[in-house]
Image (cartoon, rainbow, N blue to C red; front, side):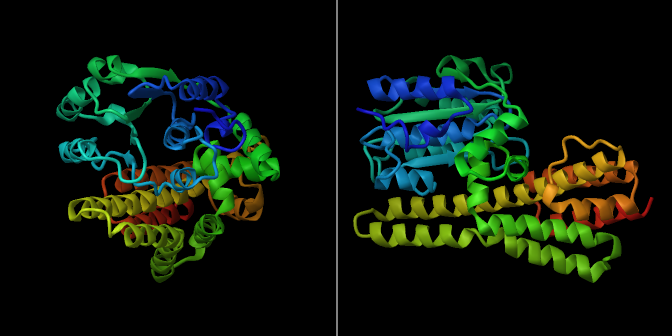
Amino acid sequence: MSTSPHSGLLAQLDTQPRVRDFLARAVATGRTSHAYLFVGAPGSGKLDAAWALAQALLCDEGGCGACDACVRVARHTHPDVHLFQPESATGYLIAQVRDLLEDVALAPIRGARKVYIIDRAEQLRSNSANALLKTLEEPPAHTTFILLGTSTDVMLSTIVSRCQCVPFRMLSTDESAEAVAHATGLAPARCRMAVAVAGSPARAIEFLKSAERQEARRQMLRAVDALPHADEADILLSAKDLMGAIRAPLADVKSTQQAVLKRDADYLSRGALKQLEERNKRELTARERSGIMEALASVRVLLRDVLMSLEGVADGVVDEDAADIVARLAAVTTTSGVVCALDAVSDAERRIARNITPQLTIEVMLFDIRKALVCL
């Protein structure tokens, strides 16, 4: 199997060259492991690398970036690549692992291999982790598991011992922004903003390609800007409009999912179709949650810039395109007010993790931020 070094997702992991080269060699020589554990701090690009490895494994050319399989993986719509994320505030549900193990027993739908990406693997509870152990010990042929975690110290040693560990180094903001600027040709300031909002270079590049996601950010910033003079009706309407903006990018995902279901319906069994439909629903839920967290990150970055302004720190400002909003908010609040507002954002993130209704969560956050900023 030959690799295509300039077009696939794997080749784009410039911020983790050792990881990129290690995985590329493994794919090229056909010596990939049945189970990997990508370990590193949040923002180091583990999930990006997992999708890149999945693309390389499912492509006949090792990740050409242009074939049907590569395009589907890049769009996160390939039916043989499954992303699992904790569905409970306290970790993975045993039902999630049961669904995974039932799917493992099924043949691939389109490709010759199946890939399972298990995000935040440290949140596998003991019973869930133990249910996964046997499959990691004796995986079916042509099945690859990619677990993502922050540290091996917080994971079951039995899980760690059954995986090939791949360490990721922590990236500085400047390194991440430079990688995005190199890939997009956009101004460094814009790239720093995208990294701060999206969380990693690859997701920042996707963010900058999405007019809908950028509009959701702008709408969120305008909503926070209006808070000092907003009444209850204004805030409720802002929250409703924000949810509409956050959900806007999902239209393309739904369209792609429906097209795949329609095309594959003739040769998939009823059980496989049902599984695909359920997986599609989970994907939409996960993407909506990701969009909400991105919007909350936009607020966090804005408030951080307000705090920097109040403290007279000129370096490190991220939202250069929102300097007027930063100035207006700084004029009506104090350092303690912004700190309380940042706590409101953290509370909203926790509510989303506990599956509290998103619109209600945003409403509560906006009310709390208004109170923190102007009721000192």
